Image 1 (cartoon, one colour):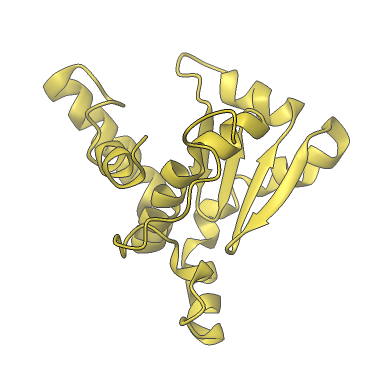
Image 2: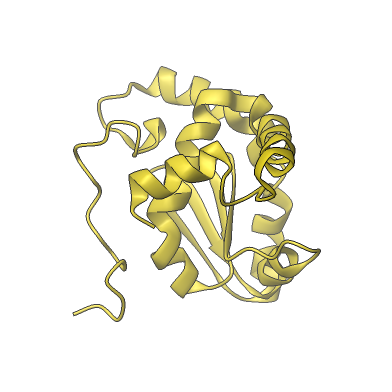
Amino acid sequence: MSEHPHFDRPLRAYCPNFRPLVGRPEIGRATKALLYLWVLPTSALALPLVALRALTGGSTFLHGGVVEVHGRLVRRVLNFGPFPAAALTLGHVVLNQDDTARRLYRHHELVHVRQAERWGPLFVPLYLGLAVRTWRRTGQGYWDHPWEVEAREISGI
């Protein structure tokens, strides 16, 4: 039995928006290549951390076409500033505090990967713009953010 009820849960087959398109076997290679190119400007923001992870310890995983990374440098980046995070998605790259966060928040972050596939290079500016708008309306830029609400509803966490 797993240490936590959310660890290693099966994918929710009933939710078509849950799994990133690049991880679906029915999607052809050309379509996957176009998706990677569409999302590349967002993924590129995290690629230096992926490369530097090798020098700072931690691990890299490939899960359904998505790179998942954790390590000391990644943890420092996620803890930097006023809004620390257990995990953060940038395109097809998911940065995690540690392996526990990777396993616990994987499904939530994969919803964000799917959102990044939908919005491509607009993902980060739209996410930040929605966060500001939501914060002005409710005072909760994260918890009431529509993309975070969607990720929690779909992933169950």
